[in-house]
Length: 228
Image (cartoon, rainbow, N blue to C red; front, side):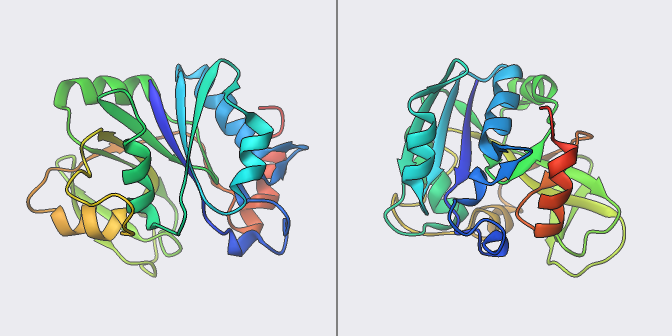
């Protein structure tokens, strides 16, 4: 299996804690977060990773090289910020399989990979991973009906509900209608704008989910992810 890891952001929310590192390299219990993420993906059966990089990309490339724990590592470095959509579009062009998992480089998700892969093989439609949280206000809310994504609501809607955890399974050609090298938002320009014309199915994960991009959760991760 093949995955894209989005690790090109500026990490402004975490800059006060790790000013001289790209956010995905922030130390968790003494080791870079990306080591934890890659170790998890290797255990779950992935064999090839395409990194989408930008800010301080050289530090990630120098640290990992072209292989890590048996994973083949490929790097796509954006010359200018491309947004989530543009970054994934460029990374998909470097992929070799007919579908790919997408993960955020600042998020730990203990994803049920085998189950999600089985669902992909049956339907072969884009899948958006969602998770139940006690309060959706910080993340934005996802509404689903009969397993299909029905609506994306902006941040600020409080109370329990489902959120988009930033993890997807996409066909390799999913974004071919967008030109390479042009910035766009995956969430707005692809998902939200095509809710009626395309079927985006949801997958509700029950795995542990930690976004280290926020200082309070970064501090929580120091103990929660220690030993992984």
